[in-house]
Image 1 (tube, chains in turn cyan, yellow, purple, green):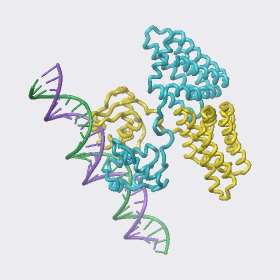
Image 2: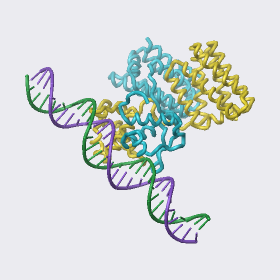
Image 3: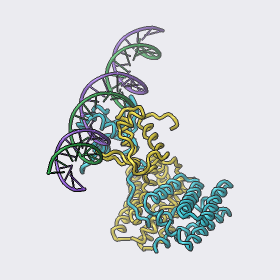
Image 4: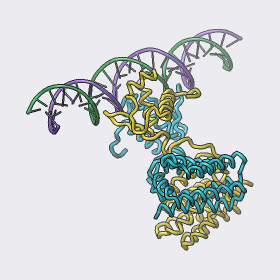
Length: 230
Length: 230
DNA sequence: AAGCAAAATTGGTCAGTACAATTTTTTTAA
DNA sequence: TTAAAAAAATTGTACTGACCAATTTTGCTT
């Protein structure tokens, strides 16, 4: 084990993970009971329990009351792990790959409900353009944009792709990406382009033209990249 | 809060998350101290602490000794969250989207080190074909395949895409996907095709032809899908 | 008003106790 | 001898009270 860790339970958890990787405990085995672990590692049962909560979240341990703690895997399960450091540009690169596929799939699964939802988003975008109050206008257009893209992702019929999009989306909201995108959406010229992009995407999805839908979505993300880059 | 949850700390954590979403605590605020929370929710401080470990892992809480627990976000940060239920076919669909892009980018960043590593993988694959011992043959070829694709992903210069590939890869290893892929790789005919696919990918990356690299990778994944589907 | 020291607050850790679910052992009866 | 039932041991779950360490707040001194 390396480095100084703030909380003890992290140390304990890492210790156990290391032991698992060293094949001291195989997958399917159960690790020593809390009381023994506490004694072995020279810590209280409290921190061992916290370490178990940690290992359980990582998907490494399966805790069974009355039986013991069993090893499921040696590395954190998918969906869990450190989030990589990413730049806004890298996010957009990933969107450029993922979103056209989502749009294409949405076009292939263009149910009336989907069309209705997307149509509502477009209406929101258009009406927001004439709002007098600036802050409300921004909020409305941002909300509409998020819902538009999220709705499309939901229609792709592949939970993995949905998850990938969700991760991308959450990254946007974390940083100041949205603010910068709002800024550009503020300039009336860009604003028009922005709404037109979404309309084009909507129309191709509505028509069920998946190939075109992919194209216009690609173009849309490209536009966003260009406008942010300038 | 809905449903019966086994562990108390999950209940407590969900309760707090709900309160955050209901704007009882804003982002940046600090939630009540452990002792008060324990009293309010009618549980012991122990389970409140476990709930805090949970919230900290979710990226929702920032725990500062001596100060308090501060709210960072209202939803789990990227990279954290339940893994969706996916079928093998959905995994391959996602690979069909991601991996050609990775191959294309690898072709654009084809450093000598990359070529050397990939070349090594190809050699492993070829030599494994003549192994007499069956189990060793399988293990070697599977290892080589994993390393080949992983190496390519590492060359894409985008941590997000790397993470996506890593998640896909981990999903493969969880289920029995690899076993099925091994089965098909066992049949000598498919085995030759399989090695040829990788050679073709390698050659295009080596040549720096990103467009062709995308194509052959797409073809490779498609082949895998077809052979598994039959 | 500014600086500093004491006190209060708050998370981190510990030890011990009781309880509930499960597993193992022992007992009992066929 | 075997199989079912009962008892005991094991193991995770939860609670309590105490003490420590880092931080913040308070209040006093200058």
